[in-house]
Image (cartoon, rainbow, N blue to C red; front, side, top):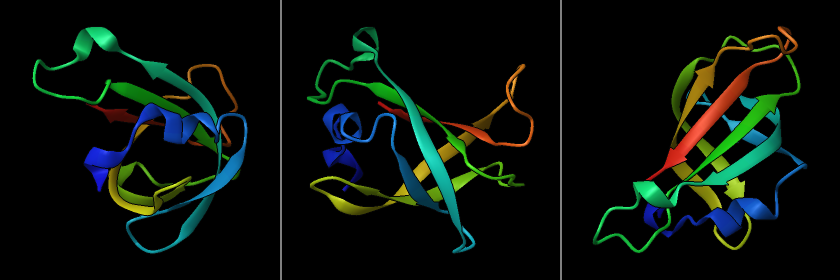
Length: 103
């Protein structure tokens, strides 16, 4: 199912809140902040345009990285999305900041 995920599935979520299901089964409320397509990273035989998504938690979390589940428009529950935490770098340290890359 991960191969079916396209940037347009996240486009509808930009600026909205959602829920990220963490590897331990707990749920983390999130805000989808940005989406960036990276056409120069496209592999020759791959139809999907590579893209990345950045979002933040709406509450403090100790979660760092792992395989998560996220509800996406048209696809429903998408499992095994690898989510990585990024440094707060001057942003609110009480939240977690995360990144997903789709190649």
